[in-house]
Amino acid sequence: MNLQKYGQYKNDIFQKMNFSYKKGKKILDVGCGDCTDIEIFINEFKLNTYGIDIYKHDNVGKLKGFKFKVASIKNIPYPDNYFDYVFTHDVLHHIDEKYQRRSNHVNALRELKRVCRKGGYIIILEANRYNPLFYPHMVLLEGHNHFKQGYFKKIIRSVFGNEAKFKFFEAHYYPRRFLGLFKILELISEKIFLFTPFRAYNLSVISNTD
Image (cartoon, rainbow, N blue to C red):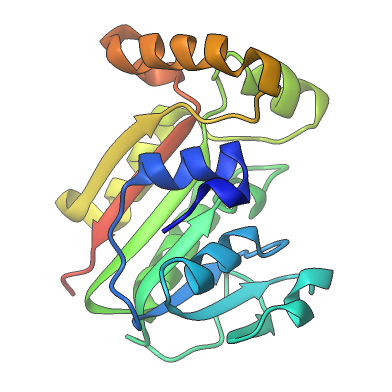
């Protein structure tokens, strides 16, 4: 498997998630966007790949072996227990970005759970609001209302309980000439416990036992 060809950022994301997918299994990417994660699921993990998004992006028609529907995380157009894996990357905070009502977030998580088969996995990746690089750029300048790490854990646990496992890591686009320096800073951040609440990404992997 060669993730380097998808660029430094995507390589880092998937390497640090460190999740083992089984070839041929069925995955739904909820909020698949420009389909860059979809390409990896199809080409590298050899998954039977589905995606939904509220917009149909240009890349959708260019990918072979990909089943796409225009739909929202609030109402996923598939039956109960349909997928082996349900994946979502930086989608939850967009559901109700202006008001951030917990009820909307919880209902979306329940919808992810509904379409995941018993014994399957739900993989949820969300940027951390107070990461020192994300906050000035993504929150203040770009207007993304990312979750705080504590809130992320709270809503995940409210739906999935102890089945939810968490991991927090750094991953960013870096200028190539400064890559070595930033990798040293990443390593420091990920080794020091006090930096945990500020790491760039919140990841939860849930084993669906219902």
